[in-house]
Length: 457
Length: 48
Image (cartoon, rainbow over the protein chains, first blue to last red):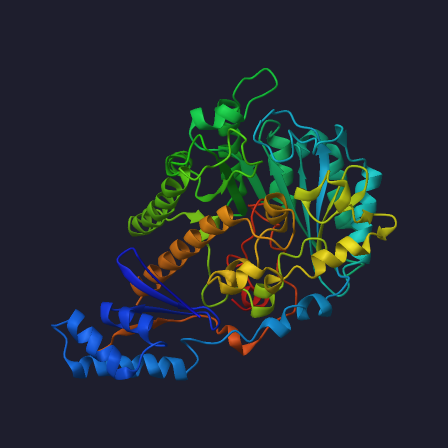
């Protein structure tokens, strides 16, 4: 399977199953589109009419180049990966490598668009005790097999509302990691309200990544990200985030925004982040129930698509100006990205990745927390709901019927199980709106990577 | 005349990898969608 598209002045052809990326001229672009359905003579006849300035001999040479690439396994490569789809999960069966610790099911902001219903996940407010967190870390070590690097995300709600427990848990993890031959990588996700010097110093010492929530322009951010008195948080948090990022001194961070129906023109928000001095950026489409006033609509779609293209152009422009920035969804390493096993195995929720509630219950991921049917078990007894876990274990890219014909399937691995479930009622469904955005993001990401590769030659 | 320029990429069909040491897909910035193309290979990262 191939995917052809024109973007940023380039004709790009992807060979889906080999991962090959080609930049082609107009004649080759048309030829590749016809190659599998027509004979050599038919193609040359048709293209001579279309490109009268080209000779038959030149087109013949072009045909030979396409044929050689096919022969070399870089065009029209068949998908032979389906039998390998559960190899990785079988090989690492039972291994848990990452936990999302719901350190606080409460929040000091009251954002109506929050998928976690203001941190409560449709349940009661609660904070995780040290004992529960400690047991979760012990559970992770006990179930991590031979895997060395273990990932723990402090999530909420707002985790800094339970900061002492976060600090105590990290100290505990550091005290036992060596004896178990493990290394913990911690991520803190925060809305910034409680960020202070103590948080900054601790996070820069202990967290391999911090995710800082900022939606961009003040009026956009303050539309949703308000306190319980209805007051916007932008002015309070921006100086704290600037100090935080400066103090990180190059360590990983992301400014993470959400765009909604209120700002499908989210590039202005990216620009605002850049103007504030931030360079590691993520901007996510809102996830909420259809019909919610913040939900993206069909009318928003062409605006969002255009914004993604303009974002790609802005990245290349800023490269030229010596002011590069990172956009999380456009990070793509064509030469060293994930292996094929990773690309077909699904996201890992419910198997290698789980979420832990303040009470110690286990869920397939943070987005399923609060949905009783998906409770997998708890950190004392382990996974007891094996039927649900099996559903997730089987959730690889080939389990999604619609993905079989999608050129982007090896870039998303079948997509987000929670989005699929919430939009179709099945974890093996597809969230089509999200797929449209994802495919556009991949086209842009690859275009940027191609432009950078060509620019470096 | 060169009609096609091929960009250097990891060849997926070589079926290398499968060590499982890479970062979990959702364990970084997004938390609300799944992309694996932007994930790093732990082995490639170490050898860089």
